[in-house]
Image: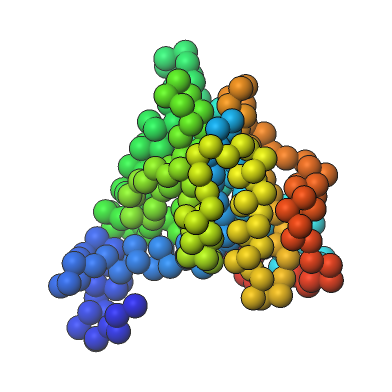
Length: 256
């Protein structure tokens, strides 16, 4: 990031004031929190959507089940967060409320695109007013509705993007390079899960560690979101051929 002069420090402390070169520094810092967060990805396939995350276990004494980074928003929608876990959880709660309000108001499930736009609009307001700070978390919001399979990425600035396959968090560039080379929309759900696990392992390989993986899927036939069980995840890891016995968990902040 650009070195700040004493004259620029005032812009650094006020999220509602642009610096002379057009920056909102606090938004850039929030985006950096996401870049340092857990590696997560979403991948569409011909028969469903998969969401995969490295849960970042900081110690062997931690109960892995207590760390939740993939969330059910509605029956047909799931989300995965990277960055500050608490901020991600607050955005998930907001998304759940919006989904239920739509059920009560219109008597039908919310569209994935509408939900993603509502969350992005909410995030954007926290870059605009004094007395608040931007969310230090980004979400991948995935679901299947009458328009088909949808996969959106929110950004701490309030920007919204739709992808066929995407990764956010630490090691994003490594994962995206592999997805760009090997992903195609004709792959099955099993194939994209195996590709995602392989990409996640490759991104962590240089650190000598084996990620603890959580996987959520939305099946195109049922349009239902569910998390895979520990046994199912273990089976996929073994099939991907990336098991690395004896790897020690990395020492990382529990905030990421």
